[in-house]
Image 1 (cartoon, rainbow, N blue to C red):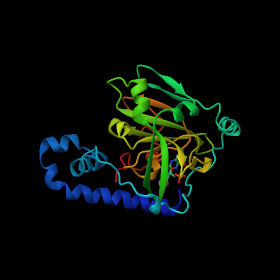
Image 2: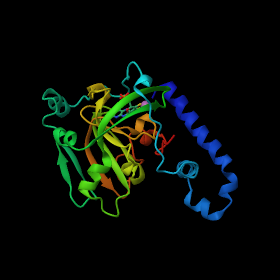
Image 3: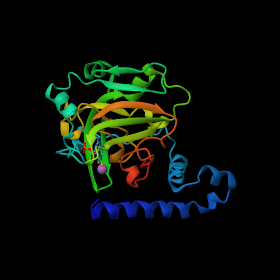
Image 4: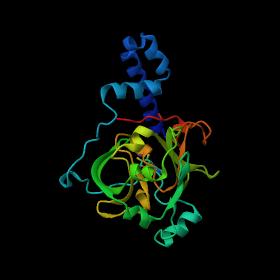
Length: 252
Ligand SMILES: Nc1nc2c(c(=O)[nH]1)N[C@H]1C(S)=C(S)[C@@H](COP(=O)(O)O)O[C@H]1N2
Ligand SMILES: [Mo]
């Protein structure tokens, strides 16, 4: 981990400590303390008090588009299966959707593109200190959820990615709660700025979850799983960066 990232992680930790002290008065009420028993949940709780969870992230116009939408993190997964899919323009790609659903299924890219789409121009904020405004098109995750029918016990949606992050082959992954999963701006995106999603930005499918920070927006999504708990998956914190200490809830 580089020094800039360490600095930002400390800054993130400090800001949640600040929020903690700001909410001290609220936390004297016992019921409040019991549901908000960690800084992470406190952040989520504070966000929900300030802004109803149905709120939309700001959308912009074509005039606001960044000249270039940079790539960050993996820019080409070092994975032979992924490389084979890319070589055939993802004709063999199948997005697996399973876990706590009544009707698990797999979607080809063509099937996802044939579903009703949504286009949105939004700002992406990375904790490493850059932002960019891009135009995304994709299918709303809610459309897929309607088809696979989550079971009542499903509490999180987990995205498994193609890119190995280290020599051991640890893969990038992320997770969101059902509020974000059903949110109208949460997309399985396949276009960026009116072009097919470039490999460096997550082809063939990357998540847009617009009220969250950049690291929540999984690229190279291969499989989606609905789960009740996150603690049995990988490092147990709900995402690759969360397992290294980032906040799970990165709402802004
Ligand atoms: N699979 C995967 N998803 C990922 C990453 C990654 O390295 N691998 N990086 C994350 C981070 S930190 C950011 S800021 C955005 C970057 O998206 P971009 O490459 O389109 O700019 O993707 C996020 N999703
Ligand atoms: Mo990021």
